[in-house]
Image (cartoon, rainbow, N blue to C red; front, side):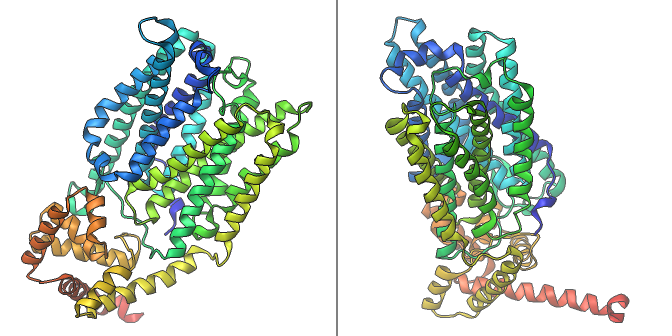
Length: 547
């Protein structure tokens, strides 16, 4: 598969706008004069950003612990949480301008709620991109959000006073949620245009949008370990770099969000740098295995961290250059982190919310630790921590480096393993053999661009139509044929164990089979019949006969 071929589309444009608005919302709360009185009020106790991070951490842990419950609650949260987030922003911004409630309590509670809402919105955008858009579209959308943030912040600082900045920040979570709905609507419309409205074209949906199948790839223990290493490393990198940048500590207005920002270094250079990083370090590397795909991006991000370490001194004459480097490096780290998360969502056989939760918990936990332990120290005092981070990242990268080859070569081996594994599963007859197949079957989702998985996908949907399976039964059937366990199907489709069992029994009854092995026999028999028909048609073709 050549993932660079996916162009940016209207859904991606609105996703980039929404992600940019989220970043603007967060930056306004932490670094503008409108919120300065609130930040100063609790700064003597602890830096205000820690309560925002605690909100992110709490929601991330909830994603890890109860992904199905949160997924099931999305229909309610989509209307309630943006309004609560706006209220939390208002509580923080107005906490020291009222006397009815204790100002500190109101400010802390508002920050916590805003952190929950911020991570919830960002997670929705990235999950939607990962599940419904191509890889390059997802990368460009995240990069676009980082670029869009820069001129919006500049315009707000020039055109609006502190009071109006607070008003805009209060409105932004609601506006971002509305932009998300527009992006989903555009993606849904594009999918219906491609599919002709037939449910069989895509049996899963994400926020009402037909989902693209996951990448077809068997997942070994090593693969899973490397994926989690990449997620953890990118999260720690983002936490450290944001902490040493002006974004790390809230309460101090920074030159990068004032009207004195030079156009070249404040807007143009960062935007061009992010675009080049997205294309050359991430999109162009998409044909490589996971073990080496993100190595250049991490090395570039580490290079910025290295500049910080080298230049950090109390009497440095290059402090302006250092600030510019940190700003650009923070954008790189942000883009790298969410690109790794999007890739993990596509590659790991885990509930999507749990993957996002793990990544968010690592990032928020590392950021909280930095704020508590080293937040008030000067950069020069943190050089040893930066060096330690540098070493940790290099070691982690080395752990995933060995054995890396181009994914195009790996795909051939994986395709053969997948084909052989499924064929052996079709031949298995005993209960023990069936259990072994379920435990070790390659985790292959239907991927229309891959010949093997396209055949399995099309065969399953054709059989679903032939035997009169309902849309939900078709979803369960496709996942069963892909070797998914019932526990996975529960999490993926947000169903109870009893409901999954009922669907499976209905599928077996309608298809007149008694277990999964007989079902797979039927799938492969149907697939072979289709292949024979294609071969007969090819043989009867004059052109093919000449070949």
